[in-house]
Length: 247
Image (cartoon, rainbow, N blue to C red):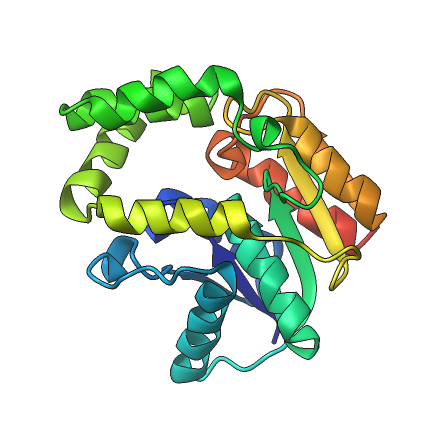
């Protein structure tokens, strides 16, 4: 049985996947689909986040070992999760048989102002300073999704996540610094599919294009989706993965 391991991004947790695990499961009904929490986020928000992407990858490996889920794994990872998946595959190539990287970026290939768009900074600062959780999550969704900001149900769900499992400023900073320091290998450490949202307001789509170009791997761009591609069109992501594996 194939094991699909889902890794989210900066300050996000497994509830942010919404219905995507079920959508991926529908494409691969005989496989295991498992979303992992990253240290410092979600159910693990009381845990200090490690100060490196590699250490986050090791945490995930130990988590799976404790659950009795043995390799090989197929890693589906978004944003910072893509860095964790890459570090994992590089350090333990025999464990990872495929990488699906969604709207990620590497300092190795991408300039800082493309990894985090300059025009996003004023809204990010406003979100950080906003004491109203509902308002803050609406701002964040406006940056990361082309659909979520206009959905009261999604805004309320994101607000409930932030209220019930808040990520500490210290952990958020550690994740940000670890992401900034991470350097990817010159070549893909495993067969890789790169997926990107053509209307990503947070990270330039060119970052995904640069990874695909440097690694000579497959790339698909959703013309209407934002950074949170699985929120905007999860079924499209699941179908794209299946099409890549079964051309």
